[in-house]
Length: 44
Image (cartoon, rainbow, N blue to C red; front, side, top):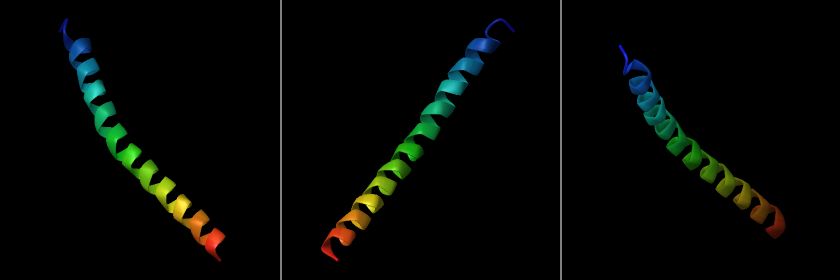
């Protein structure tokens, strides 16, 4: 029972890392799409 918070904390860190990676990838894709939209506006 004593190490339960420690296990939960480690589990929380693992979840955070797993959630962070796809989020960063999505943000990068969004930025790329915005950049492409701006570039297409400029070339119009």
